[in-house]
Image (cartoon, rainbow, N blue to C red):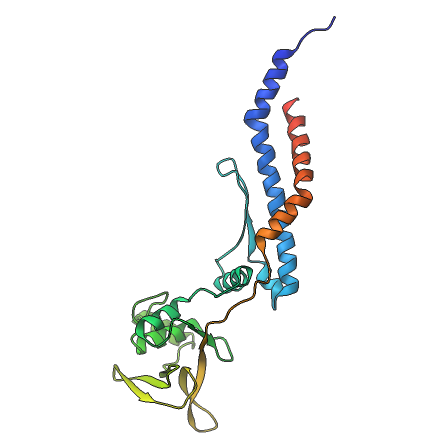
Length: 252
């Protein structure tokens, strides 16, 4: 005698629609996202200088019940990694930094110019001093006026040196601060930001930041393309794996 178990089948299909299908799609999205992250990190590691360090900024936000879509992204928690990867993933011009925006507002920098270190890394407190001395006090990403407590803390750590800065704009004008007043004069120095330093027993203006024209970056990698390639290659495989897992759970 064959006995109908139609109610059990309906119950199973209802469970499939309400619980298992969202699970299948969510887990498939996560599988595709993590494989995309691995492929993208591998590509960046091979294609960029310091690529292994840069690649760590490529991360995944997993799909959850509340947010069912997975996301592969470049983490902007470490700005220099984010800027380097995003700029050369999109191509074109990089975004202006906060310090550059303050320079533009003050009239020291043109819209088509950027600032880059001349030969070595410039520490954050140097930008703070420059902004304070040269009246860039709009707090565009930096605290332009240091507190007494901050100054004392830096002196104790031997990180702080009171330095005098000079901006040379692309039209060959030099700007310095003397007794709180900005002085302007003609100069033959190359555009950039200079600091007075002792060089072989002589005080000289040493350039620490360059002013140059905004570069145009060539697109060197494409995160969206990697997602599409992974999905085309492995999407059905991941869906089938998660479907089998869901079926095994639904019909227990």
